[in-house]
Image (tube, rainbow, N blue to C red; front, top):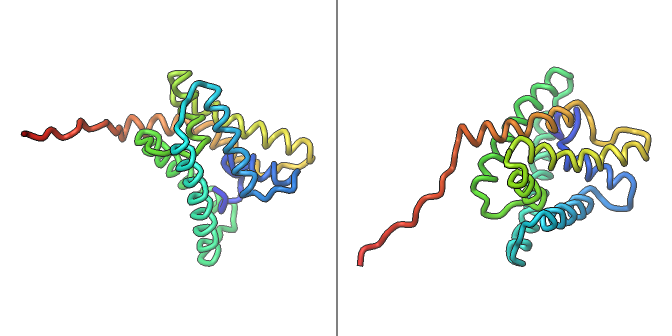
Length: 190
């Protein structure tokens, strides 16, 4: 969605907005927002070991590095220019992100902090669509507030709205389409 340049996903938009009004870089803003997301998940009743928190933030660092790496490679190869091509990128990218989230949330080994918040809200509302939409609404509101303060849209575009409204229902649809069930442990005979 970043390559499409028609609005970032809500957590990315919020990070861009925080960086625009503070001395933080986008990467540091991501870390700050992830800490706040983890605190919000804890306030909703989620409990984590210190090891889970360490692994979660290690995943954040790996994710950020992977995003930067693939964006730089992508920019060397091809960057979409026309609106139709950028829209096509978004229309392909958003469902792939939703599919990845659907599988990743079901596996749930280690999640990034905003995804723990999403999982807490999904549990609270007993609906993937509602929980995911609310969890993405929080960073969208942060980006919107800071955009108002700066009097310009920061990271928010049509793609952000579409992602906000469709990501939750798409995650739910993909979870029904590709359910991952826990396998019972193998029994060993003695």
